[in-house]
Figure 1 (tube, rainbow, N blue to C red):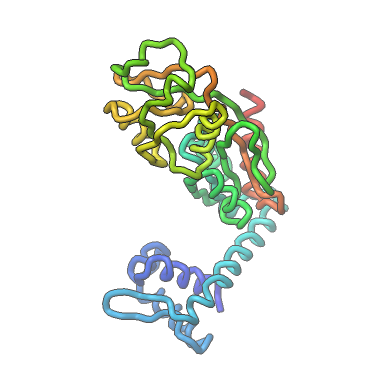
Figure 2 (cartoon, rainbow, N blue to C red):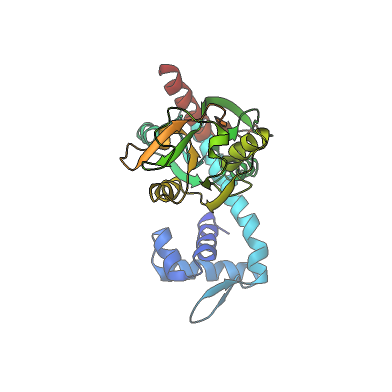
Length: 293
């Protein structure tokens, strides 16, 4: 059994197609098919059920997959640890980000890190804060930028606070409140809102603020996309509460401070259990960048 065979199995399981799996692995299909067939013969069981239209995992394949993935990850980590002893940083690095990161310029940070450590394979994963914390604990994400309500901290991961800011009301330019210099939550209570989905940390901060003020609001539009939320506001369909850095300079939009509005805190989080060399190097790079700023 060879590591390359395991990579091929994972690729076929993901793509459900031998041709697309071969393209992902940068090999010809015949070579990939031959290696998987050889592995099946060695194991004595078929891993895939093949038809003219699609490829599916057999029960044996489904049972084989988790250990195969873990074996590959362990091999990659072993190679990365060995390389780190002579100052070489290599291996995979998965960064998780929420839709509204303002404290770190993620593209610039990743670009600088890639130029310094070209042997590191960088992946980016988007999601909500709770989802990303779970992914860190599961070993699926190395480092993540989270956004949580004030007085809430990430659980069972290591973290540092990056920034905190009060959200602003985002209104259409012709909204009845757009000329105000400052608002309170009660001024917005009767408005229709666009916000992140219920249950997400991006939404929780605003829900808690309205609950604390003993006010109710109507959230008619839900989306994980800040661009879509802003477009709904531009059309006069809703108002929103967002970090000020995410409100573009646009003649159709106005941002107004909310004196009792919710405060959001951004955190940098990572696993408290044996982070990989690439993760340690990226954390060091971020700490240096923040210290210089």
